[in-house]
Amino acid sequence: MKQGKLIVLSAPSGSGKTTLVKYLLHKEELNLDFSISAASREPRGGEIHGKDYYFLSLREFKDKIKADEFLEWEEVYRDNFYGTLKKEVQRIWDKGKHVIFDIDVVGGLDIKRIYPDRTLAIFVKPPSIEELKIRLKKRKTESEDKINMRVAKASTELATAPQFDAIITNDDLEKAKAEVLQLVKKFILG
Image: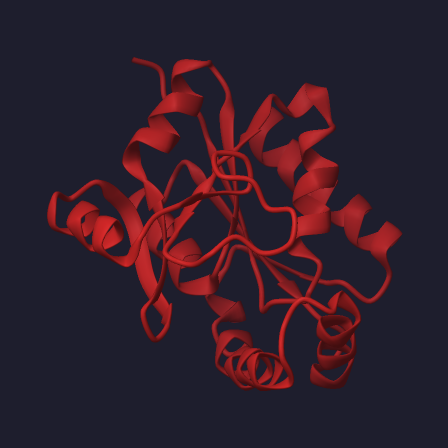
């Protein structure tokens, strides 16, 4: 069975990693497919099960942990689990494609540790913590408390940046797109 490569984009919430992942997915020459993460939370406005996330109950998520069905998983916030199902990566490899992840920093580093030679781990940095807070508020998807929780977590996440293969500062979206495209092209196409 042929295994493809793994492209990990990790960042604090609001850094722009999802925008960059969507951009890369539209580049047909990269032959990428999106790894849908599992989450133990309710869908947020417009999110679809099996497209944005695999939404699992807390019980289902914990059962899958016990059954060793996750490549990686983390309790990101209390009783709020996220993870990558092993069968999701296999699904993409079976299609002859490379896997791209939009994933938290702990999960991203776990994947890099499990598949060191086939993974390109990219950290997307916001221009500043202040800008991050502005971006999160603009989303209008979460309470002030949740935003403050994410901002507090961002400082810890930023400290992990040196452990990644590459760091992109997303202060200019077009520049960040060009940088990420060049990095991924070089890794996949050689």
